[in-house]
Image 1 (cartoon, rainbow, N blue to C red):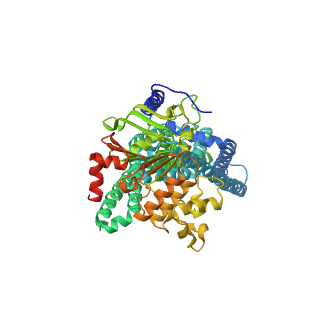
Image 2 (image 1 turned 120 degrees about the horizontal axis):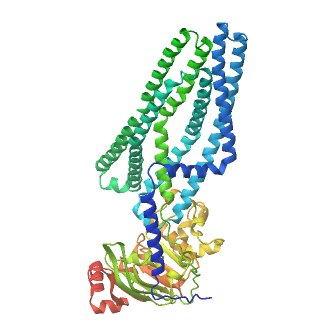
Image 3 (image 1 turned 180 degrees about the vertical axis):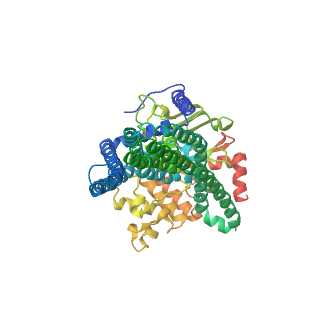
Length: 609
């Protein structure tokens, strides 16, 4: 049943929603701390999907750590046995040490395997969430972001998080277990010697905190520099032929060297500052060990306050106690890198999604296909208006061509019809129904688009043409391919319609790709068709044949044709001439030529009349 909901200001709800969402997100971004607290919480959310496995891993970590420390404590008892201070023989303690260390090693191996599994599952879930997010983001996001930067986040950043979780996480937990358990055992041996660490541990923590604040922004810059370099590489590879044609290899190489040098410098500064932590903390730990030996020896020689067994155990345990602190310091750069990568991933996941449909948005049921734009104004930025009070009316079943100079707003009209962007003011209706009272997916299903930039995926020709028309038969595919004048080419191939296309369909010409996308559009049973420079990659004869075939096949459908080449629009029912964001002329090809206005100037310029 036709949706009859109307509103005098169709964009008010949508734009208010956009503004509120944007304000909320902006406020959240400003309020969000840059101390990674939110990163920890988000990472925990992903880890919580495997909480029971994680609990088992933590249990094994505790068990492995305590067994290793007990082995160290038994070494002190063995030394005491040599001096005659401990019960039992040296061999007894050696056997127990072997058992403890062997069990600890086996458990550590099982733990490593378990954490690798958890981290890869988490990375898989994170990649799925990021990809799902990309599908929900508005077109404006991709207009502003480089493809290489997005790919860098999906691959490099998530892999960095994955590697950190599989190794650094358990190492940190294991180190904490070792530090706590070693401290408890040392406390039972000599509470007095513990005072040495009252001085050295705060020094380590304060230095680590200082370096942390200094290094975090450096790792952010490093990730940003890598993303920028990847974006440049992706762009240059895509334009490889053009670069060779114009002989710009040296300039491109110079540009890459600049980006590469910026990435190298960012990496060097971040890593150099990050690796300062390990050696410095190691120095502090070595000083603490020297003090332990000094004061321990004084306690041993000063009246037997400390036995040789106790001194040996304390020295060995102090090494065990200081070692994890040094390990954490050494992997500090990796941790900062992982946190910076996590931050980039979560920033992408927090990007503002396409504005939700208004409450109660209905399904579009096209009864005739009348499309109207009334007093529409729009700009991609506040200070960059593109359309200013534009109005147009596309009659049901008609072919409406939109022509005009570059930058006049032709493609913008299509972006607004499809709601890739929302208008600033005015109204857009289909059969009298505001598109802002309709579900986006319903609106977009009513249109079929053929763009100048063709997109074909790795698969057979049949699969590419049938894309978007689930269950299309081979006969239906062949019918539209004949209409699109591509059938003869397809059957000339060794495998015909089962011929596989390579990545980006590089094994066929641009014109052939264009014809396949036109055939794909013909196969979709939609109420309206949009052709945005759809015949720009074919020759003039094929262009005329396709235009005739498409007008025949799209009978009773509302068709919009965006064109620079005016030869493609001569048979249109109505031609709208757009200039400076407004319709300055409209009529048939003959009527516009007879007026001798702006359209006549454009036509004369192309055909030198």
